[in-house]
Image: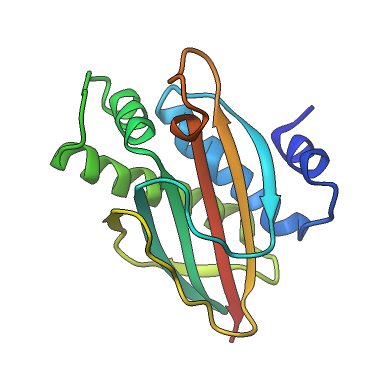
Length: 175
């Protein structure tokens, strides 16, 4: 079963298949570079608070405008960046935060490629930002198309479920 199919079956509702496929493509593009495998454990069309404490955020614009967020725990951030840089890190540092920004950029590039020649296509991305902390909320404008997919890290992983979760959300509005 493909990751997109597992996302669809995990949710029981029909998400915008173009956006879901684009998120999955972006996650696959980024995480293969991090030597990490994930499986989809949920999809939501309703914004909620991000569960992790590290969030990469990148703006997108062209025929549509919006942003992509990549949210994870500190342990997930350390794991992904360790894989990306082929180095061993143990705690949040400026290298980890830079790496989360780069992972966000790679993931957004994968989403951008997957959305080319679709109604949701965009041409440009901004410089990524990284938010560290919890209990913030993003205010979404009325009329945005929103979709979030939640992935669980496979293989040797932390004991707590929250430390194995990666959530990627896309919110777009047609201009």
